[in-house]
Image (cartoon, rainbow, N blue to C red; front, side):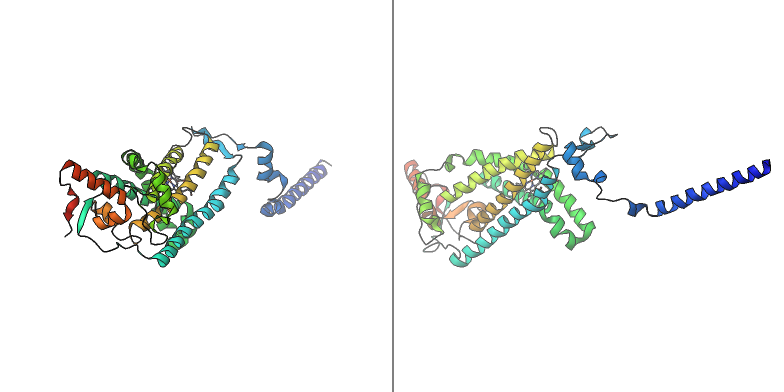
Length: 336
Ligand code: HEM
């Protein structure tokens, strides 16, 4: 009898084991399919809506890293991945298209009557140094910044992951470190040229007459004309906005929380791409858009006829100062 009971216990145990195995096997085999990824229990969106924030605990000292999702995170991502790309694409390609149209319609603005062969000093060596310091940093900041906005979609497919990673790392280092000389350059530009860049009635008249680009008019202008003053204020205010927002991003969580950083990135990205569009216009006028302009920043001098055409009030002022002082300023340097 005892033997019979023992045999029955064994059979019952074996049956129970078989049932467990039979039930367990299909469950484990079907595990990946049996989890419904859209089930409400795992819907991040619902969790986020209810909790407003998804965070846990971590083992590294930076408590900010414990937050996985937070209000506004997806809006910010959509801004960065979609909206900013549209703004940047329209601003940069729009500026390039406008430049092509102006060039085709107007061509290079020539020095009327040709060069006189006499030159006048326009910018000192220090002024040119400050200009090129800021401009050089700007170009690299612009390219490395555009890489953050567009690189993943435009360059990654062309370069492949390894080359893109190496380039992006170098670009990111350049963006961070060149921000410092750029900021110094913007502060110096603000200080050295502030006096000549206060808007006045002459600038209003200059704009009303098309600034010498629209039509063949050459409205009078002082050392800086209305267009150059506009560029000055774009550089000063755009540079300040880039620097403040950029340093908030570079030193995360020092001056602001996550919402402040999202705002800083929105400001930085928008100002950055608009700044680039404006500077494309500036580069155009300073090079192929106007004969005789680039030498003001390369050599520091311009032809007297150029000055007469584009900055007649400044030339008259310089002439009268020279006469008054009885000195021969380096303005009468003959061209080679
Ligand atoms: C003091 C000056 C600047 C500082 C401190 C700075 C700093 C930064 C930082 C920390 C980032 C974020 C990088 C990342 O997400 O890894 C960034 C992005 C960016 N910067 Fe700058 N930057 C400065 C100037 C500029 C200038 C002058 C331009 C434009 C010419 C510019 C254009 C951009 C652009 C387009 C982005 C990418 C925005 C995005 O897609 O999110 N930055 N910058």
